[in-house]
Length: 355
Image (spheres, rainbow, N blue to C red):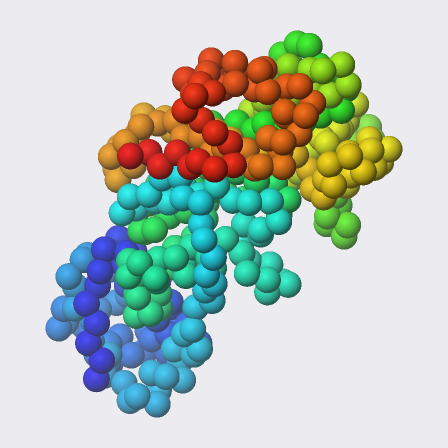
């Protein structure tokens, strides 16, 4: 017999959903049969599986060790360890400044992603255990392309994960990016269109006309707002706000209006990128999620120390800003946008902890 006590991260879900995670290799018919025969009980009583679990509930499984191990399967949760640039952390959420080159979420390549690094980080801190990972895994709630840097939000608790996921799903959280683009942009603009993704080559196409002939039926509407922070006559430092959040939206949308992002090998200008690679050894696009703004909230996120969080751009990005004589524009706009001035914000060697 195994006895388990429901914790905060298991509470709030249906009993059968919990059992499906605990006995992930078992067909549903198995644990429904065990429930009917009282081989699995909840708080000492017969259960149907549709009960909503509460913290402190007692689950008993009258199963042999062999049966339990067979249906529990391999319970090893992937994890990895690296130094994370943590911007903000409390008991429910984690905001991380992801470097370019790191995957946000697991992929078929099995390369370590930010999800595995978050799990490794929390295991080291003792905030999750091997036992708790059987029924709840911390996860990230927004995805950045591998070669895009910046703020990624992760849920440490079930409540934190659910509330964060709802904010991103409902688009009530504001996401602002910084990028260096080819060409000169002088005015703020709001652009709309349709985006179609080719799954085979993982590349998207932007259509600017209203939906009609020539636009694939499955194309999705996209909306992007951008504001130039300054230019040097050949490139522009641009702040971009995502209204919708589609695959490669910023990269493809800007390229479609003739202002591809510096270093973007998929949507960018080959001659422009070749020059930047020769001058700066640039290996990826200069696109950085620098600002996250939360709305007024209830629930566990109501306890955030503030609503706006920022992440410094990577060192190579800041180096180009300086060399291209855009540093003054950068700091002037940072101070105007988020109240940060040059004296207390040094990119590449400071994280905004939120404390």
